[in-house]
Length: 344
Image (tube, rainbow, N blue to C red; front, side, top):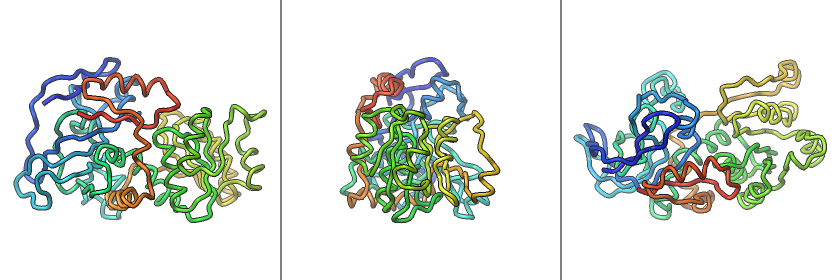
């Protein structure tokens, strides 16, 4: 089969012929329909973030496809079934999994990190982890449910427990942040989208943002003041999807007394949070990682019935031979790009 192979940081992926994997007991072979292009992959390629599996290996963790082969003992799938593959595989037996928090599994395995991923024509997955994609959910665009949609869903619904009527500030309107906007609006929140690009703010309105703020247009740069001018108080919950210490602090400063700031974006740098304010105003700063397996069917159903839109999220399709062009587009920070997918 053809695959885009990662040989190490600071070099392009190489499209090569590699052996087609075979499913073992309890596994399925999936013919990849599409795999999303994510900043996480770019961290490995451009920034030297190490993968658990040593290169050469295959990246890609947002995949959908069809069942092409059944491993021994697999009875819950049949040939040609359409499936979504979660970004992270869980063990199901560790204390975190047993407590219903599989997204922070003690022995998690991530496609394109611990094991070969889906920038390839075929990928092997445990049969227990695949999610059915029903009629009504587009197979190619549905691939991004695996991370770009599910990660914000977990942050909004499980970590922040957003309720109808809550005011939400969404910092960053990229591939993940735009789905904070979309999911929060879908569950009844009033959303304020914050981004430096006017084009992204216009897109955020289409995905449910009630108000928008461009910090570059504020005389003093004070997003918290701008929000209080809009709604008279801070927000119930602020989400930071960028992974920048400055925007984490800015997001934290927008929450009202008793409010919560949820950090979704990754950074290895430190952010200075006023602990006295956290204590005195009973504010919370929490993290959010990935999504629990139990939530994927709920997200898929929301897409099927039209509560969530994935078709308009996919703004670029690239063949496997164009994988490096897809990453160049991601690097360009093009304001019209939300999520690109590789279609092998």
